[in-house]
Image (cartoon, rainbow, N blue to C red; front, side, top):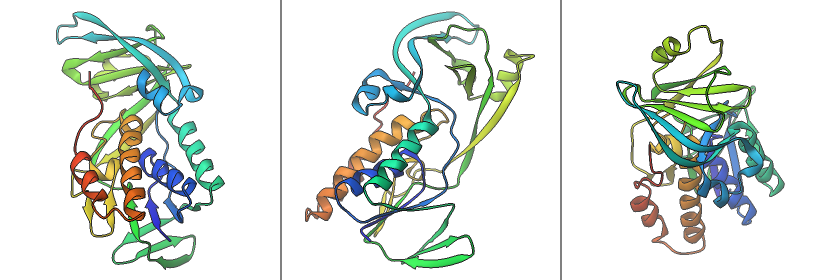
Length: 264
């Protein structure tokens, strides 16, 4: 096996599906996460062909200061059904011949020890791409639809809280204690927990971290867009390395620390 991908997040699934499409032997291990919808910029929607996964089109951001003064800015993009998109990436990986072991757990060492149902087995790939990782907890919540403009993101600077319209519900990221105060009498449908580890070495021998495991996603609500950019970077570097360019992974070490996404 050329590449073992551990984790079903956007970065890992992008790497796995692309490398499988290029003809490499790929295995993808882990469990499908359950993400809330996320905002993706207009440029990224076009770049990664995400329009089919859109829940809402965004035209502006309403920014509220500490004393709740309102300042509106143009912000074009889409709220994306992250789960639908990830399932689509997984289908592409299967189509191109990747081995998928959903519901498995992995112990990483010189070899990868996999546990699935009652079975345990080991593999020794050329590279291990790790996205799945535990670390600091951050939370997001899905709440019943609240009365705000359906084409506007609300951002409360002093509370670091983002509210995204998504069909009949809204996704709330950031300070949930404040959100319950703001949305009194609003039904909470579900609360999601995401583990974001601190940044660590991107490449350690055969282990390569990307996405959440690399600290690329440091806030709930930015996993998809960051994951796609960093996943594409790693994919291009791995292809070049596997084709004989021994310096290709140095590019990932350097550029993998840069932030592609312009924040609010």
